[in-house]
Amino acid sequence: MALAIYQVDAFADRPFAGNPAGVCLLPRPGAAAEPCRFVPRPFGDATSADAARPCPFGDTAWMQDVAAEMNLSETAFLLREDDGFRLRWFTPTVEVELCGHATLASAHILWETGELRPDEQARFHTLSGLLTADRRGEWIELNFPAEPALAVAAPAGLIEALNVHPAFVGRNRMDYFVEVASEAAVRGLKPDMARLATYETRGVIVTARADDRRYDFVSRFFAPGAGVPEDPVTGSAHCALGPYWGAKLDRTELVGYQASRRGGVVHVLLAGERVRLQGQAVTVIVGELRA
Image (cartoon, rainbow, N blue to C red):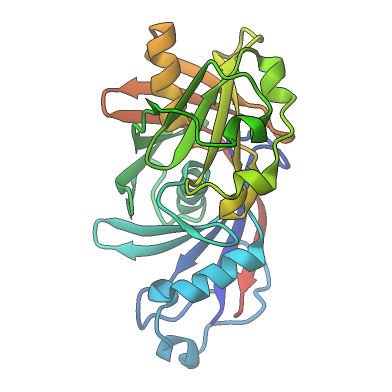
């Protein structure tokens, strides 16, 4: 089956920054796949054989194989429904329950390809409930659930694996959360990935107050157990970072910088049990998936 597939740099205002995500638009069951909209000469048109094939959205193994082939921290799969899109996210090794940058990338592609009008809200039905995205000028705003981290005792070996002196250790339904004393400590992290991969959580968020006055906090995110040693910019981590730093700084609007090698900026607006995340996105690759 020939399907359009895209690679988008999310939480970035230029190519080769932020966090790359794959986005695959799937046909409704029984519908022929359309050639890629942005390729002047598509590799091949959809055929009657394509129309006879079942939609692969229910084929978890196929989606996992595509995500492994893309080898990005997340690949998103979208299927249009009457009131929005069904959305699933896969790392190269597992399906995840929440992903910010691939959701931002998905909304960006829906508007860029004309699947949605520029003023139309993107609505996604996911394992984390209904998520929405709206255009705010050059920015995209995601409406996500707040995922505050509650204080816990550090599990055996976590602090040693990070080699830090924690000011706070917490956990939410997805990740461990560790505050350290300084931005330099965050930037200097060289964690033991093999040891981090043994924990049952999706990953580990490490954060500190930012030195640069343009930002309120910095962070890094490690998820080797989910096939992502270090994620460049993690939107869903800011569902925990926002409530945490909002409470510490007595603020409802914050700016975070994820201090990975690629780096990225996330604007966070707190709204009770919801968190609004704002970022930008750039399409860098347009192709056709034929498997």
